[in-house]
Every structure is written in C-alpha cells, then in structure tokens.
Length: 424
Image (cartoon, rainbow, N blue to C red; front, side, top):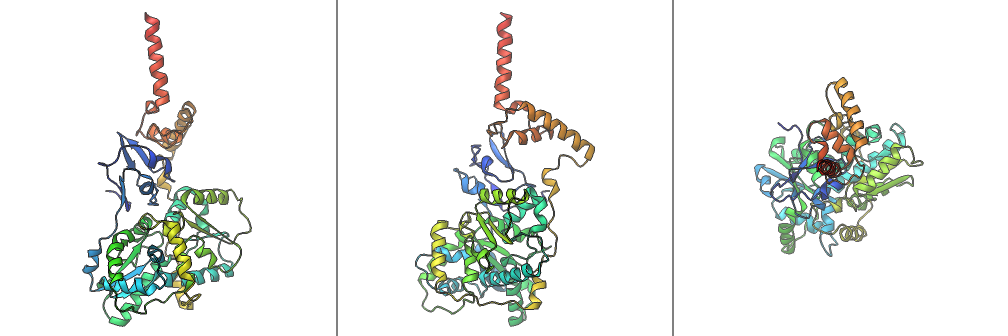
C-alpha cells in the first residue's frame, strides 16, 4: 500500500515517454521505464511542473468534485485570493463571493482574511528574534516539501506558522459552530485551490496530524459555473472582509511586502526557488530577515489549476488592490498559539535512502560512485533517469542496468562489432 498521498497522477495511456517531465522535475521524482513515465512517490512534491510541461496532457491533478459539498449540512467556501485574478474587469471582490453563495455555499471565509493574520503573526515572531534567520515562508507547501527532500539543513529556517488556507479553515469552522451550534462533522470547508500542492497538504499535512479543510476544488473546475452565476447576479452581498495586504498574497512578493520592512526577498518559479535555496544553504545570502518562495511563476496565480495567464492575473490583482483598505483583520494574542505548527519539520530521509541497513547502504554508495565514473556525465535523460548519478542510483537499487545508457550501449555494440570483424 502506498503510504504517500499525491494529487498529481499519471495517465499512462496518454504518456509517450518523451522525457519532458523527467528533465523539469525539481526532485528527480520521475523515471521513464518501458516507454512510460513513473513517479517516485517518496520524492514527488506535487508542484505541478510535470502537468505544466507535458505536451500530451498525461499528468493531471486530482481534487474534489463540486458535488462533494452536498455531503455536508453547512457548506463553507474558503477561496484563495488567486481566484480574484481570474476575472476580467473585476473591481469588487463581493461579486465573486456572492457568486460562490449562488453556487450553494452557505458561508464564505476569504483566505485573504487569514493571510492578514499570518502576516501580522510573522511580523511579531520576527521582532521577537526567536527564529532562525533568514526565515523562510511556510505558505507554499510545494516549497516546504522541497526543503524536506533536497535542503534538510534549512528545515529550521522554515516559519512554523500554519498557511493562510489552514488558518482560514480553522477560523471559519469556529465562526460557523458559534453561529449554528452544529457539530464539527456537519460542516464542510472547501478550499478553492490554484494548485495541486495545496490538495496534497490538505490530505497529508506537513504541520499537523489532520487538516481543518474538508476538501479542495480546483479553480479550473469551479470557474465556468461561477462565471455563469456572477453574470446573473441581481444583488451583490457585502461579504468581503479583507484588505490589500491579504489579497496581495495571490502574487509573488505580496507576502513579503506585508512584512512592512526592507529586509526581505521574494522569488517565484521552481527553478528560481531552487537557486535561492542553494545559495541560502551555501550561506551566500546575507542581510535578509524573511524569504518568500513560490513554486509557481507569478505566485499562486500561476498555479496549474488556475485558468488565466499568471501575468494577466497578476495585473488584475494589482488593479483590484487599489480599491481596498490596507487591512481589515488583526491578531488577538490568543490566536497566535493556535496558528503555530503542531509538528516539527524534519528531513524526509526515505527519499534518498539506499537501504535500511547502514552497512549495505554504504556499500551501495561506493558502487554508485564507481558506476558514475564509468558513465558519460552528459545527463541527457535518454536512459530514463534525469541524470547519470540518478541512473547509477537506479542500477544499485536493481531498477536499471548500465546498458540503459545509450552511450554505453553504443560502445558495447561497437566493441562486439569490432570483435566480429577481427574474426573474419
């Protein structure tokens, strides 16, 4: 049984083994075997890069169907601020929120409200000087999982605060229970998500044993019906309770700007994120208190489950913020403890473990080094592994053979040919 939950799946019937995904995966979680891609569960971070890059649409993200909201007596929507950037000429967030009500949601709690609380909590923790600097935002679950797998030395730098999605879910539940008196299990809280990493975080949280979110509905799935409902609205309800700080989280730099200081850095796009983490690990970044990292280009508006071009959506968010107050949500002292992580972030050792037996693992490591020396070092991906080192690892694990390298195979064939020629 697979103990890892993943929202990114492979449709083997559509896969052509083209190696595009293999070369772009940031954690070397993909192999091409027997002409088809295979995803290594222990390494996948559900960033969605393979979905974005696959020309054959063989990768897909699973999320909850809209019909799942009917399983609950009270239905709560917690829309990501990225949702607001999907609509042209939008100058009032209440139009979107009223549209969600028209779709059948009883209550709306904007994630941007929680983002303002997380921003304030972050500023407070930075002032207290109790955390390892530079502090890395924990808002993007793909980045958090990337750190667990590739940059374990930076685990202590990750902000131990729940992401706005989780804070919004907890607060929405608290409000609904207070208003209705219903038991928690009858309340369904659904995140309107721009990315698959959030779906994974709901089902297998990094920070707690169980998420307060009942499920995630993709923006791309909800968009057609929501647009239709918005076009038919006769009355717009005053539902929005967030300001420009919270809505700004939808785009790269929005979270960092909410620190209200100058010592921050923001990077987006998985390759840029990796470059920053490498320099941070090598202690080449100085004079920075806070680092915001988003796996998707443009920030959350660039998620593969969004529908609009991320840069168009980014411009729309910037325009929308002009009509908003700075912030409408403020932290109570009692809220901060409820927003802290329950679990410590630790290195996912299984991701690169060669063997449970340390002696055997050391022996396998030596064999890997020897095999690597004999490989061409081209990292061409033709063997079905992303790099020559990854192929060497697969060989010692028994999942590949040296002749999977086409250059080694070509040399062997040439050798056999030369030997046969000498026999004439």
